[in-house]
Image 1 (cartoon, chains in turn brown, cyan):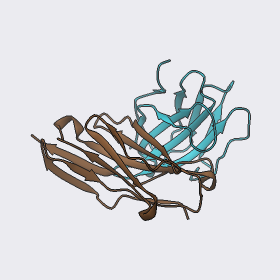
Image 2 (image 1 turned 180 degrees about the vertical axis):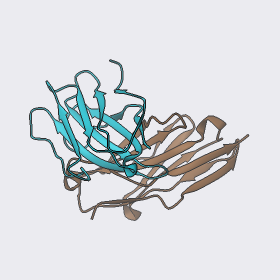
Image 3 (image 1 turned 45 degrees about the vertical axis):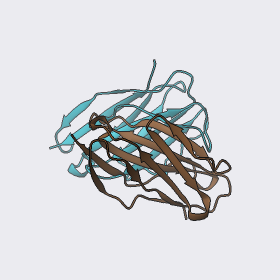
Image 4 (image 1 turned 90 degrees about the horizontal axis):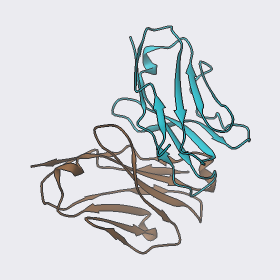
Length: 115
Length: 115
């Protein structure tokens, strides 16, 4: 089965707090790709990161960091020192040979950063 | 263009009418996707085009939905005899190539309201 689970439906944090968004996936592929997208209130999904299954190095980009752990099938996303502009819905997605031509998206986590 | 362009941005239509939604992908991108996002829901795959290959229509919810892609570029999603449950944001995305691992980039979506 191909599946992405984002168990956190909504999260609220106070500005400057750190927050981690969880993503757990299921796949029978040995090679696959994981993605994170941000959907601000304006509606457009913005690509944040792509990670292939052979690269387990954590990645940091400014205040954003991603922790990929194949052993637990997780690809978690941490925002450090959150800002109001980080308020959005965040989607995790999976693509692989057995996902056909589509990306499998989680149901999203709505993050609200309170000033 | 610089990004995926969709039109109209917003459409209100009466139940039973037909609607057409247009997508202009990023220049040079051969793969094009349509997704649907209902209020507060995740992303539902509708259809995929790649080059001159036959489209993957496996996600279309009923025969009232159809899509075409002319000249390998612009795509039109048509919904016939619209129903209230068709109200959603219709998102178009494109990628540089088809297949696993290519990042897909989304447009701002077409918000459809059926009254």
